[in-house]
Length: 375
Image (cartoon, rainbow, N blue to C red):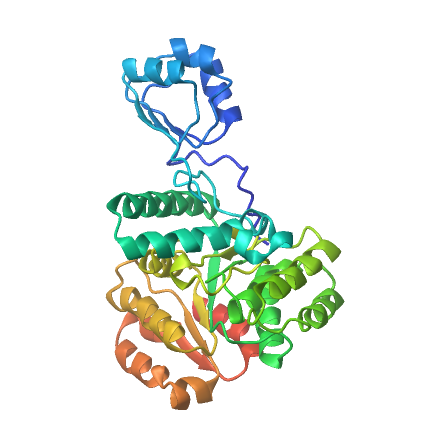
């Protein structure tokens, strides 16, 4: 299983980024100063003495709390300082992706008090009033999240699992999606989903269950079934997930990439790493682009159909290099209810992607199909 640990150093393309106080101290200990470094969301209020004397030509400080004297000094030394923005329910300069605990902090007081709900409310309010400053903050936040998820997934073999949010806990379809996520994780892939409820949660749950004996997943499915959907109560739905996490701590890591654009769909708590965006287009493209080992499409509605063809387009043009595998699950769904498969097959005919697409009827056949078309 891929080990996704944000604390691991990643300096191949980011060796001039400082994202923690420990990294800041390490750089200063080398005596080279901060010239042309990017210091991101690091609390520097206890490093005033160092900042008053350090060389900082061309450095950029993004949302770093610091003493006014220190900010004046580094500006005078040639640095650019973007101060923290007060009153926001999120940090636009954050240096890491979110965790379930980050987004659901305060859940005991009701979902409406959590950072996730507050960020959605802020988004709705500022989107309605057209505030250009707010739209800039959203863009900065989303770019910071993209940078963080790139660092997190560097070198990982990522399989995307797409599917609808309406798939309820307690159903065989949900259980099947969870077993799929577990098998992919056990095969060494990093599972990535849209990070929401339904099929997305099930696949993240499966990856979470991968290190445990098989019986753990069956027990977890029974516990979750008591809150089948995030409606009518997000609190009950989320608390059931945290109950599973508390009973079986330290599960396998996977990634969820949700969006506040669909803020009525809460993020699931089984993705250890959550890259949540304001812009849905950035989120969709980023999720599919990072699924470098292929994508499994479970039955879904408009959003999943969109993802099928968002994935097919770069495969058709080979704009991201060699086409990546696409596995559609459930013949009746993709040939009759929403007949995307005939169009996809016609689109692929005679092109390199033709050998990289397949349709299977049973979810249990998806991992083998994925491995087969990967060669």
